[in-house]
Image (tube, rainbow, N blue to C red):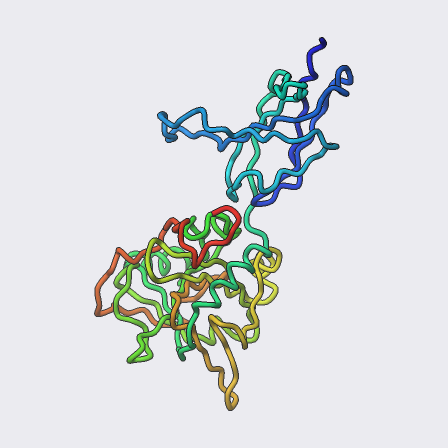
Length: 330
């Protein structure tokens, strides 16, 4: 009996955060004997992988021989933005139920995609459920060390510059490691209506009137929803001046919010004056995508404590939380 053809020239296409299409070429001989394909998919091992990981965990998909390309979706819980290796063999099911198989193909590497707008909208809808009532606020603020503000004055002409967002939050977030911006907060203390005096990020605080950043000339986008094994949750929002590079980036990747009417952050007009509200029951992290001049606000030392334990720098999302995870990868 002739050997089954070995797949070669494997191509991966139409990659999303939880699916992909795969195709390959085969020699014509014995092609009509193929009844199934075996596809072996594995997360790409890195140097820090557990060397004692059990190697016999089945990762093979047995699929009926369908016309190529075939879509692989839902057979594994694929994670977004993750590197995988894949190899293929052809198989012929025998009368006794056993398979005759070809040699394995070469191993191909690929990386899954970020969350799409569809997935982010699912996260957005989950965040809306717990956002709570809206509280009035008047300023955005940013805490840093004194050295940061000294550096801005000396090297950047008094303008805080956007930097690339870290990898905190959802693993599939399309803004992590890609969007450039400046982080701000807007949370207020319930009893005073003013920013809290404690901060995880440094003892010096830049405060700026809310209308300087958030106004009818800016667009608002939903960026992420996550927690860090804690009871409280974070929502990342992006404010981008209309037509700016940050606005164009977000327009393609993130759900846009109505600045006047949403569950997280609003800017409305009352008697000719802009009025601002933020959600009470989630911690908002605001990313502003353009440089911000220090003279537009004030810098002063806070009187409270520096609570490093509350920092979200490169924080990993809790993958088991039912409140802030969706059914695709983590």
